[in-house]
Length: 640
Image 1 (cartoon, rainbow, N blue to C red):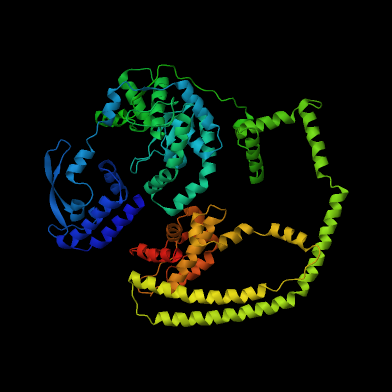
Image 2 (image 1 turned 180 degrees about the vertical axis):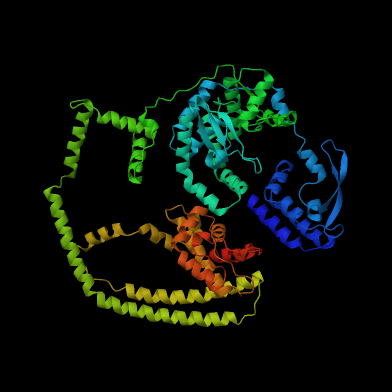
């Protein structure tokens, strides 16, 4: 939904940036407010954050402001509500988004106060560390990420992309942390506690980065030089997956006895609950001083307080830490020990094939870690002759030799099939001349179709340019009727060709069964499906077929239906994704396979000169309301 809001903000900005009267600006503001009220479900608590995130306030503050033309002079107030001056404010900021009263209501909340006023929630260190340890041993990137969040208290985007841990000499359960989010340009480096050994946590973070490097590279490529947007997109794309893991392992709304008790006003656990539990356990383990020293310690762990030489004014940041201070523990927090050997602590370089083989063995041995798998392989290799393991290996070798033996009867079957194939090849050779004649007939029909399409194109070009949607739909309908007649004629010709059968031998039914097994029936079924049926299907290959049909529909629209008067649509990842409703990564992969056709089509109409399909983020579509043109294409897809 925030993407739709982003588009509306951009549309509003482009419409009013050059206007200089309230009468011209106000209708655009009313249209924007109508969208927010009718098309979104944001509350006062979330709307201000969403608008700020998509750059609403920043955009209009960047414009040159003139009182009485595009801005008004408004009164400013301090935190206590006392007037402290005036400032110019663009009309859009006055009439759109939250009002002054809305902001006041939004900032008046008692959630933290309610949490601290209650009894709080107890966290059991033993069960929390046990679950965290299981997650850290997982090869699933979502589970491993949650385990690292639980063990270090870092935010999801920090663990997935930004965090850098450096071991501190002589401190087994602490690291220097770099990559703190929400610091607006600052890059603090400070010490944090780890609930598991530091070297183990660093190794697990490296393992996670290897599993997610393609995902992070995709985000960084799409939003170059914009770290804040990258962080938001990382959490947007992985937020639900991580929350599902947290709820599965620590407790969700349907869990009767959650591992981690729900915080006040929350129905289930999420990554913020893990952050709060971490601060409780790490502070209780490492800080035995006064209440004030514990608060300061927790604030430093959270990154709310990073100055090495703090002043009393800096202590205001402790208020933020209070929002995470509702957990407590009655049991001592222990220091988990990871059993590793010296060899396990050394990085081993291997080929991708070897790495894949090790990962496969990890699953076969019960989803254990790579280190545990190597340890088990070493143990097996050191078994003495005559042991139970070697006996089992000998038994498996015998069974394998029996399986690979080919009986005499099997050999005879193979010979018969080879003879059958040779016979059928002779029949096919005899029919080549007939097939050649059929192909010539089809080619002549194809030439006739091209002539008719040229005639149709000449008729459509005579139509006066008109960007009206009804006119575009009428042009699409006329084109479909013409093409339907052409297709019917072609099908009739092809049916006549296919009616001539090849000679049948006594073994033909057997050969046909072997040939049918080799054909890709699934793809044939997809190609025969209508669009409505295809969009409901869940067969393998449906996604790629959807993208292909949307691409063909867009090409047909640009070539034959659009007038060229600003109503053409460049084919990009965003357009294909919006039209087909498929995942952006799948669209990227399809575009890479068909980049030549895409680039040729876009360049044909001067809609971009990009060098590769994955970078088709053309500016041709910007500033245009392409949704109405895509709606015409959608109707053409589902007209039957």
